[in-house]
Length: 257
Image (cartoon, rainbow, N blue to C red):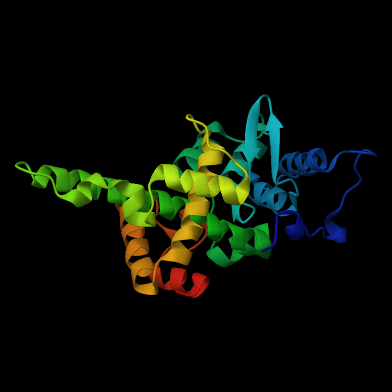
C-alpha cells in the first residue's frame, strides 16, 4: 500500500521561490504560512500542506508524531495539529480548536474535494485509519460494555463468557497472547504502559488480525457494532467532519468482505 512519501505531488506552476537548501518539512510549513499570509483560507492552505507532506513520523520537543500508523493508516488530524502549531499567529484559535477537538471544518468541502486536496494515496490511508483504528477502538468499547452488562445480568452466578475478556471475545486470544504474537510478527514489545502512538499501531494490527481470522458474516457484524458505537459517541456526526462516509457498504467495498 502507498505511503505518505508516495503521495507527494508537487505542481510546478504552484512552486514559489524559497530560500536555498530549505528542508522539505520546513519548506512545506513555509509555503503554508506564505499562502495564509497572502489571503488563502487557512484550511485550504492546511490541506495543501498535508497533500505535500512527505514525513511519516517525527519527534518534536520530546513528542512523537506518528502520522502513518502500521505503515498503512494515515492520522491526518495529528498532522493537522502539527502544522497548526506552526501557524498559531495566523489561524483563529477557536477555529483550529474546533477542528482538532470537535472535528468541525471551518469551510464547506465535500468528500471528493477533500480526497483530491490531500491526494489519493493519503486519502486511501485515511480510510484505513477510520476503519482500522477509530472503528476498531469503538468495537472494543462496545464489547467491553457488552461484557459489563452481562455481568450485571447474572447476579446469582457468572456466565463463563463474561470471564473471557474483550480481546478473547473479539480476536480469539487473550491480550497477553495477542501481545506475544504481535512481538513475533513485528519485533515490537508492548510495555506495561503503552504510548498512545504504539497503542494505535497495535489496534490497527488487531484490526488486520480480525479480518484474517473471522468469516465475512462475523466481520460485518462486528463492524456494524463499531459503527453503531461511534454514532452513539457522536464521533461520526457527518461526512464533512471526517472527509469520508462511514458505513457498512463502504467497509465491504473497501475490504472485500
